[in-house]
Image (cartoon, rainbow, N blue to C red; front, side):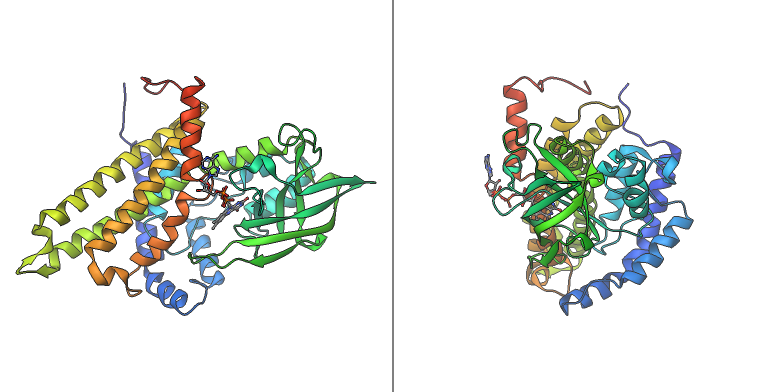
Length: 390
Ligand SMILES: Cc1cc2nc3c(=O)[nH]c(=O)nc-3n(C[C@H](O)[C@H](O)[C@H](O)COP(=O)(O)OP(=O)(O)OC[C@H]3O[C@@H](n4cnc5c(N)ncnc54)[C@H](O)[C@@H]3O)c2cc1C
């Protein structure tokens, strides 16, 4: 039987997260806007740390981290629901206790040095595959690693790396066998900042900027190869694949919150003698937004459910990511329109969300790349039409 309901326990978790976000995180919003408008980071890192500790005491720590690493291991569906709740605020808050999925591919020593300190919040990672000459075409990366004695020597440049300015180590992807390239000739290296790579922030239209990373003869000991030599491209795809349904999940929370703002505003804003809520033009924007949010919600939960079932969720995740990214941009645009000139000001957070959500159509696979994947899956017979949960 198809069952769309949450269990009592799942609903309790969702409600607890919602109330935590409302009571503890949303009150920081005015300060975030003030700071960011003045060119400062939205929230003090110490305040974020305190919030994470408070959440940890309530059991919200490592929501998708295996229990043997101290996590709650709530599974993909519940994690997606929690991320939806977190998306309701633009305060850059996330629960602690998580680490990149590919760090679990490390050996015991690498887990001790990289995975566990990242889960504990003592170390910060970044993931670097994109290069100035290879974004969507990630198979075409040029950063090179050449063996020299017991070390690999890495040379190349990475760009648009989230967290690249703050990270103290990078999971960097480099070509170790140019003849094989992505098909067995790319390797992932764990490279500490003090091994010699440099970063430079890249200003963007969003509030948190990525960085470019430069590797000039950076010597990386052999034991810092993550996984197997030549198998790095698979790890990169594993990393990207995991995040794919989480991106629309966060956007759903933001879109719902903004739509509520638009509904509230439409009731109180008068024009030509009536609340604008009475005009069909406004009602249609509200209705279309709700329809698109609901569609995105179920596509996202379906992709998460497939991951939870151990199914190959790549097709469903691409559909959810493409749909969710477009939905979020349409909804924020309508919400801004409903608020008129006020929507365009920095007094309200709508223009901030507008800038932030634009990224969703670009990173972790652009709209065009998702469409390409979806079409190719159908054309090559990797995905079938007419299925339900199969
Ligand atoms: C804020 C931000 C954070 C990021 N964080 C990270 C990170 O942490 N780590 C990391 O490695 N990367 C990161 N990226 C990089 C991101 O994944 C790439 O920007 C993205 O994959 C697109 O690559 P590109 O920018 O080189 O665009 P291009 O690949 O040059 O694409 C340009 C345009 O051409 C289209 N296009 C390209 N190929 C095709 C095709 N075959 N068919 C049809 N259309 C096509 C694209 O859709 C796009 O519209 C980040 C980017 C941004 C902006």
